[in-house]
Image (tube, rainbow, N blue to C red; front, top):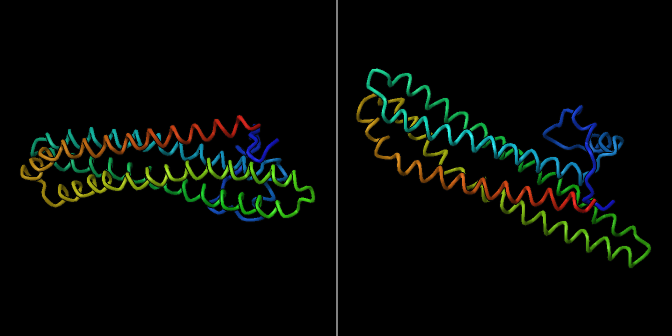
Length: 218
Protein backbone atom coordinates (compact mmCIF):
# COMPACT_ATOMS: atom_id res chain seq x y z
CA UNK A 1 0.00 0.00 0.00
CA UNK A 2 1.30 3.48 -0.84
CA UNK A 3 1.61 6.36 1.60
CA UNK A 4 -1.78 7.60 0.43
CA UNK A 5 -3.36 4.18 0.63
CA UNK A 6 -6.92 4.29 1.94
CA UNK A 7 -8.36 1.55 4.13
CA UNK A 8 -11.64 1.20 5.97
CA UNK A 9 -11.44 3.22 9.16
CA UNK A 10 -13.80 1.07 11.20
CA UNK A 11 -12.03 1.69 14.48
CA UNK A 12 -11.85 5.43 13.91
CA UNK A 13 -15.50 5.92 14.71
CA UNK A 14 -14.83 4.84 18.29
CA UNK A 15 -12.23 7.54 18.82
CA UNK A 16 -12.76 11.07 20.03
CA UNK A 17 -10.56 13.09 17.68
CA UNK A 18 -8.72 15.84 19.50
CA UNK A 19 -7.83 19.29 18.20
CA UNK A 20 -4.13 18.50 18.57
CA UNK A 21 -2.57 15.37 17.08
CA UNK A 22 0.12 14.52 19.66
CA UNK A 23 2.72 11.74 19.39
CA UNK A 24 0.80 9.44 21.80
CA UNK A 25 -2.30 10.12 19.76
CA UNK A 26 -0.55 9.03 16.57
CA UNK A 27 0.81 5.99 18.41
CA UNK A 28 -2.73 5.01 19.38
CA UNK A 29 -3.91 5.35 15.81
CA UNK A 30 -0.92 3.37 14.59
CA UNK A 31 -1.81 0.53 16.94
CA UNK A 32 -5.23 0.47 15.28
CA UNK A 33 -3.66 0.30 11.83
CA UNK A 34 -4.50 3.92 11.00
CA UNK A 35 -1.71 5.91 9.37
CA UNK A 36 -1.22 9.67 9.06
CA UNK A 37 -2.07 9.48 5.37
CA UNK A 38 -5.43 7.94 6.22
CA UNK A 39 -6.00 10.49 8.97
CA UNK A 40 -5.32 13.29 6.48
CA UNK A 41 -8.02 11.95 4.17
CA UNK A 42 -10.38 11.73 7.13
CA UNK A 43 -9.67 15.37 7.99
CA UNK A 44 -10.41 16.39 4.41
CA UNK A 45 -13.71 14.56 4.68
CA UNK A 46 -14.44 16.57 7.82
CA UNK A 47 -13.78 19.77 5.87
CA UNK A 48 -16.17 18.67 3.14
CA UNK A 49 -18.90 18.09 5.70
CA UNK A 50 -18.24 21.47 7.33
CA UNK A 51 -18.50 23.20 3.97
CA UNK A 52 -21.78 21.52 3.16
CA UNK A 53 -23.10 22.67 6.54
CA UNK A 54 -21.87 26.19 5.80
CA UNK A 55 -23.74 26.19 2.49
CA UNK A 56 -26.98 25.31 4.26
CA UNK A 57 -26.38 27.95 6.92
CA UNK A 58 -25.69 30.70 4.36
CA UNK A 59 -28.75 29.79 2.33
CA UNK A 60 -30.84 29.97 5.47
CA UNK A 61 -29.30 33.31 6.47
CA UNK A 62 -30.10 34.74 3.04
CA UNK A 63 -33.71 33.63 3.29
CA UNK A 64 -34.02 35.07 6.80
CA UNK A 65 -32.49 38.37 5.70
CA UNK A 66 -35.07 38.69 2.92
CA UNK A 67 -37.88 37.88 5.35
CA UNK A 68 -36.60 40.37 7.93
CA UNK A 69 -36.29 43.12 5.34
CA UNK A 70 -40.00 42.72 4.64
CA UNK A 71 -41.05 42.41 8.30
CA UNK A 72 -43.82 44.57 9.71
CA UNK A 73 -42.79 47.11 12.39
CA UNK A 74 -44.56 45.21 15.14
CA UNK A 75 -42.60 42.06 14.41
CA UNK A 76 -39.09 43.52 14.30
CA UNK A 77 -38.03 42.12 17.67
CA UNK A 78 -38.75 38.57 16.51
CA UNK A 79 -37.23 39.32 13.11
CA UNK A 80 -34.02 40.52 14.76
CA UNK A 81 -33.79 37.34 16.82
CA UNK A 82 -34.21 35.23 13.69
CA UNK A 83 -31.49 37.16 11.86
CA UNK A 84 -29.14 36.99 14.83
CA UNK A 85 -29.68 33.24 15.11
CA UNK A 86 -29.09 32.75 11.38
CA UNK A 87 -25.87 34.78 11.50
CA UNK A 88 -24.59 32.95 14.59
CA UNK A 89 -25.31 29.60 12.95
CA UNK A 90 -23.49 30.56 9.75
CA UNK A 91 -20.56 31.92 11.74
CA UNK A 92 -20.32 28.72 13.80
CA UNK A 93 -20.31 26.56 10.66
CA UNK A 94 -17.60 28.72 9.08
CA UNK A 95 -15.51 28.46 12.27
CA UNK A 96 -15.81 24.67 12.14
CA UNK A 97 -14.51 24.74 8.57
CA UNK A 98 -11.62 26.97 9.62
CA UNK A 99 -10.80 24.56 12.43
CA UNK A 100 -10.81 21.67 9.95
CA UNK A 101 -8.27 23.50 7.78
CA UNK A 102 -5.97 23.97 10.78
CA UNK A 103 -6.22 20.26 11.55
CA UNK A 104 -5.55 19.30 7.93
CA UNK A 105 -2.42 21.46 7.88
CA UNK A 106 -1.18 19.98 11.15
CA UNK A 107 -1.60 16.38 10.02
CA UNK A 108 -0.12 17.12 6.59
CA UNK A 109 2.94 18.77 8.13
CA UNK A 110 3.48 15.77 10.39
CA UNK A 111 2.95 13.35 7.51
CA UNK A 112 5.37 15.01 5.09
CA UNK A 113 7.99 15.63 7.77
CA UNK A 114 7.91 11.95 8.72
CA UNK A 115 7.99 10.89 5.08
CA UNK A 116 10.96 13.15 4.36
CA UNK A 117 12.80 11.78 7.40
CA UNK A 118 12.15 8.23 6.24
CA UNK A 119 13.78 8.93 2.88
CA UNK A 120 17.14 9.27 4.62
CA UNK A 121 16.78 5.73 5.99
CA UNK A 122 16.76 4.03 2.58
CA UNK A 123 19.82 2.04 1.58
CA UNK A 124 18.52 1.33 -1.92
CA UNK A 125 18.85 4.53 -3.98
CA UNK A 126 16.29 3.39 -6.55
CA UNK A 127 13.65 2.69 -3.92
CA UNK A 128 14.42 5.99 -2.22
CA UNK A 129 13.96 7.85 -5.50
CA UNK A 130 10.64 6.10 -6.12
CA UNK A 131 9.37 7.00 -2.65
CA UNK A 132 10.54 10.58 -3.02
CA UNK A 133 8.77 10.93 -6.36
CA UNK A 134 5.58 9.60 -4.77
CA UNK A 135 5.98 12.04 -1.89
CA UNK A 136 6.40 14.97 -4.27
CA UNK A 137 3.29 13.96 -6.21
CA UNK A 138 1.31 13.62 -2.98
CA UNK A 139 2.60 16.99 -1.79
CA UNK A 140 1.55 18.62 -5.07
CA UNK A 141 -1.98 17.24 -4.68
CA UNK A 142 -2.09 18.46 -1.10
CA UNK A 143 -0.79 21.94 -2.01
CA UNK A 144 -3.49 22.29 -4.67
CA UNK A 145 -6.17 21.31 -2.17
CA UNK A 146 -5.03 23.50 0.71
CA UNK A 147 -4.72 26.55 -1.56
CA UNK A 148 -8.36 26.08 -2.54
CA UNK A 149 -9.48 25.56 1.05
CA UNK A 150 -7.66 28.70 2.20
CA UNK A 151 -9.18 30.69 -0.65
CA UNK A 152 -12.66 29.52 0.27
CA UNK A 153 -12.10 30.23 3.95
CA UNK A 154 -11.11 33.81 3.11
CA UNK A 155 -14.08 34.19 0.76
CA UNK A 156 -16.50 33.57 3.64
CA UNK A 157 -15.43 36.72 5.48
CA UNK A 158 -17.30 39.27 3.31
CA UNK A 159 -20.64 37.50 3.51
CA UNK A 160 -20.37 36.82 7.25
CA UNK A 161 -19.42 40.45 7.81
CA UNK A 162 -22.46 41.54 5.82
CA UNK A 163 -24.80 39.47 7.96
CA UNK A 164 -23.11 40.60 11.19
CA UNK A 165 -23.37 44.29 10.28
CA UNK A 166 -27.01 44.04 9.34
CA UNK A 167 -27.77 42.13 12.52
CA UNK A 168 -26.13 44.91 14.53
CA UNK A 169 -28.02 47.57 12.57
CA UNK A 170 -31.37 45.97 13.35
CA UNK A 171 -30.41 45.39 16.98
CA UNK A 172 -30.08 49.11 17.63
CA UNK A 173 -32.57 50.41 15.08
CA UNK A 174 -35.76 48.39 15.17
CA UNK A 175 -37.70 50.66 12.87
CA UNK A 176 -38.78 51.06 9.26
CA UNK A 177 -35.56 52.89 8.38
CA UNK A 178 -33.53 49.80 9.29
CA UNK A 179 -35.73 47.40 7.33
CA UNK A 180 -35.64 49.80 4.38
CA UNK A 181 -31.87 49.65 4.50
CA UNK A 182 -31.97 45.85 4.60
CA UNK A 183 -34.37 45.82 1.67
CA UNK A 184 -32.09 48.11 -0.32
CA UNK A 185 -29.11 45.91 0.49
CA UNK A 186 -30.80 42.64 -0.42
CA UNK A 187 -29.20 42.48 -3.87
CA UNK A 188 -25.75 43.05 -2.37
CA UNK A 189 -26.33 40.36 0.24
CA UNK A 190 -27.53 37.95 -2.46
CA UNK A 191 -24.40 38.63 -4.50
CA UNK A 192 -22.11 37.99 -1.52
CA UNK A 193 -23.91 34.76 -0.65
CA UNK A 194 -23.81 33.60 -4.27
CA UNK A 195 -20.07 34.26 -4.45
CA UNK A 196 -19.45 32.39 -1.20
CA UNK A 197 -21.56 29.43 -2.33
CA UNK A 198 -19.60 29.23 -5.60
CA UNK A 199 -16.34 29.14 -3.63
CA UNK A 200 -17.70 26.44 -1.34
CA UNK A 201 -18.86 24.33 -4.27
CA UNK A 202 -15.44 24.59 -5.92
CA UNK A 203 -13.71 23.74 -2.65
CA UNK A 204 -15.91 20.71 -2.05
CA UNK A 205 -15.12 19.53 -5.58
CA UNK A 206 -11.39 19.92 -4.90
CA UNK A 207 -11.70 17.94 -1.68
CA UNK A 208 -13.67 15.24 -3.46
CA UNK A 209 -10.94 14.98 -6.11
CA UNK A 210 -8.28 14.74 -3.41
CA UNK A 211 -10.10 11.95 -1.59
CA UNK A 212 -10.76 10.06 -4.83
CA UNK A 213 -7.10 10.26 -5.83
CA UNK A 214 -6.07 9.06 -2.37
CA UNK A 215 -8.37 6.08 -2.64
CA UNK A 216 -7.10 5.26 -6.12
CA UNK A 217 -3.58 4.87 -4.72
CA UNK A 218 -4.63 1.94 -2.53
